[in-house]
Length: 118
Image 1 (cartoon, rainbow, N blue to C red):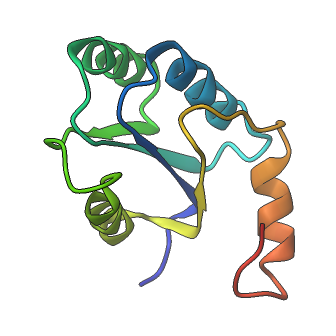
Image 2: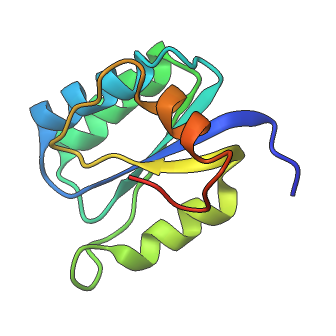
């Protein structure tokens, strides 16, 4: 598959509302703007749905997969996100973590000579 974006960022989430909001903001603040961010819900509460509806209205790079609570930590849903990813690389960001603005740029550079990096 030819990618039409530099990167896809996948953020799995269950119930981290405010922290998810900050995590998502750090993904969208990357120096590489040519990205998409897919938030993968795993039985999220209504507050997260509201937060995601607002994020999608504000930034067309954001999408949300609203799934019922799955086994364990919703790993099966992440595969569905990978199948729709349009980025040349895929980066995972925890819903309670932050990235510095150059994170995706660094991953793009490292992945020119590696198949996997962290």
